Image (cartoon, rainbow, N blue to C red; front, top):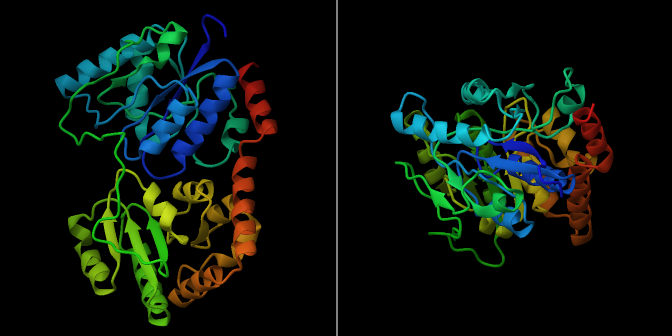
Length: 365
C-alpha cells in the first residue's frame, strides 16, 4: 500500500435498514482493494451489522455521525470545524454526494475544505449515473450527513491525521449501542407461523391502506400468517394507522436498532410503495436471501430478477397482493432457493468487475 493512498469519502445518510449501507460496504471493499482509503460518514447507527461487516473486513471508517447537524448551533459548528480540519489534511478532497437532500452539508464541506463538488446521484441501486457523469472528476464517492463525530483507530495504519483513540462526541439524541441486538418483544411465534415482514418508513397512509387490506384477506384464509411492520415512528397525522394496526392484528414495532432477527425469522419480505424510485430495503431483502413480494413498479422490476416479477402485486388491488403472497409461500423449497439465488446474482451483477473497471477508467482519466 502506498504511503498516501487516495482518500475516498463514502458518505451516507444513515446506517439504517435499506440498501445504501450494503452499497457502501461493497464499494468500500472494492476501493480498499484498489489502494484507496475509504472514509464512511453516516447520520444514524440503527443497525450494527454494517459496522460489524466493516470491522470484519478491515475496511476503514473514520467518522460515524450520530445526530442531526445544524450549522446555527455553536456546538454543531465546533464539531463541523473539527471535521473540516481533518479533511483539510487530505489534498485534494473530491465530494460525490449520494443524496441531493444533503446539499447544505455538502456545500459547507466544499466551501471550507476547497473540495470539488460532484454530481448528485439520483438512483440508489445502479451505476448509470457514475458512468454518465460528464465532468469525469470522480475521485471520491460520497454519501454525507454531518453532525456529532465518532473517530476510530482504523486510520492509524494509513498515517491519517484522525485521532487514534475512539471517542464519541455526546449529543442530545439517542445513543445506540453497536453491540446490542433487538429481540422480538411482545411477539410470540410458533414454528408453524408464516411471518411476513414489511420494512419502510411511514410517510403517508397511502401505501399502508393497500397493505392492511391485503393482509386482512390473507389472515382470513390462514390464521398462521403474522405481519410484522418496522418503520419510522408514527407521526401525529398518521394516528389512524395505529387504529388500523390494532384492528387487523399487525405487530407494529416502529424503529428498531437491528432488524436482523426479524429478517432471519421472516418467511416473506413485503414492500407496498407508491414511490417512483426503488426503495433501498429491496436491496436489503435481496442481500439477506429472502423471498420478496412488492409493488409492481418499474424501479423495483429493474432491481429484481425477472423470475420475481410474477410475485409483484398491483398497487390498486388488495386481492392481487393476497394472491401473490400466497403464491410465493406455496413454492417448493427448490423453487424458493432458486428465486433467492437469482435475486442475489442480480444484486452482485450491479457490482461486477466490468462495472468497476468503467468506474476506475473515469477516476483515472
